[in-house]
Amino acid sequence: MNTDQLEIFDLLGVEPGTLSVSGVQINTWGREVLIDCVYEDGPPRPFKLLFEACSSIQWDVHGEPSEEDRSAELMGLFLGEEEQRAASIVYTDLFELSVLYGSFTLIKDW
Image 1: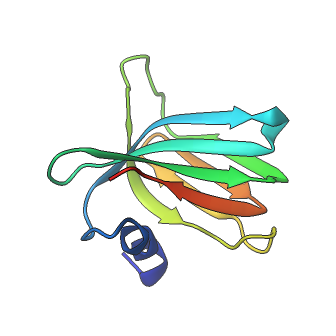
Image 2 (image 1 turned 135 degrees about the vertical axis):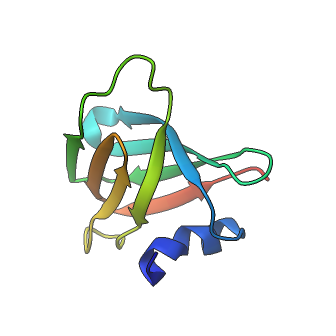
């Protein structure tokens, strides 16, 4: 992983490890994207990535996900830059999501 991909672990305050995505919600007609994630090393620790004031969302599906796929392995995460300067890219084994956003919040309660 490069430095950009390790940024999420610094924000979480954990060692680099395995992350997964368990859900994605697109609200307010695409102006808000909420991604449910889990840090898998040790006891599972859920957290959320909240992107607000979104101006562009691109979603690409890889392969043929099925209804049995309850989570996706997070392969790469680039948080981008706020105020629409650089898109965040969430890359998993099932999909890739690119979000151009105004503000970002990491939500965790651990």
